[in-house]
Length: 92
Image (cartoon, rainbow, N blue to C red; front, side, top):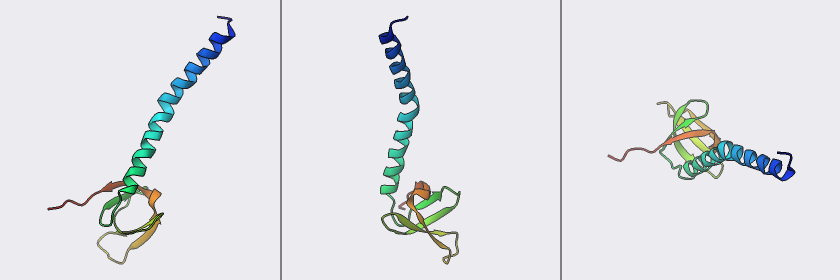
């Protein structure tokens, strides 16, 4: 086991295994979030990273305006990255 090529190969296998176990799922989650935000539309119910539910009333490139609660005067602009879950309205 004193062969340096075997040790280098062993290190490469270990590093590759760690990448596959740790980095790959994170990149998959980033793609899911990007897809979710790209499909965001006016009228969607969203859950923010701070735990508030609201309805999207306007969308720009980087920001959204979300209306919270039944009070129509509570409209807050926020970054799209603050949205963690989107629920599409049901069409009855």
